[in-house]
Length: 233
Image (tube, rainbow, N blue to C red):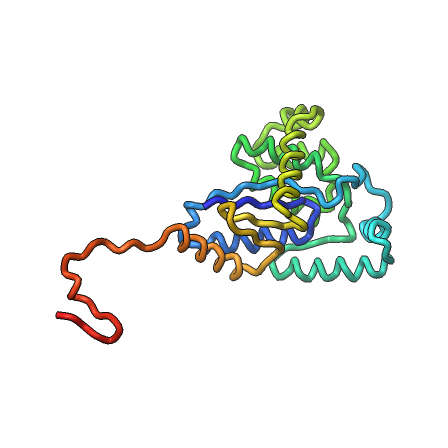
């Protein structure tokens, strides 16, 4: 089973949705047969590389609302995150551009560490208050996971993986993604939003059953069975 996940590191529900999906996947009996592929998405492609002021002020300005309303909105995100075992620190969050973070995540994929880096980048953004547009910060995070810091800086100073990130963003538009997180299962089913663990688990089981129906072997003694409250002998 192939599952593609479109998300952005700066999306509060993407981190929550990823956590809940991972919990469901860990309980899914056939999880060894599941391939998870991460796809890039940007909620705000015009976000700056360095933020002035607070996250509350940046959100209020970008959404034509007040700082007080932004704080109420972020409080809701924070409470939602707690239900998934996550900590959001909006007093520290730097709402900066995530494009280069997506590029370095694609680079990490060749080492089998895109999933681990995705988790680290989301934690860096929402919990640690780090600037995901800063190349040195990204290189440090890469180094934490055992990848080469200097190689990461070389990638970040170039345009490597730019086309792949743009292609994945365009692909999301092509298939009709209107919000993230968005999960595509076997290119047949779509799940939008940070659903509960049980929802994801039910979806996994349902799709597995459809793709792998139980097959009954030919039985020469067809009378030795009970059907509809009657038994044949």
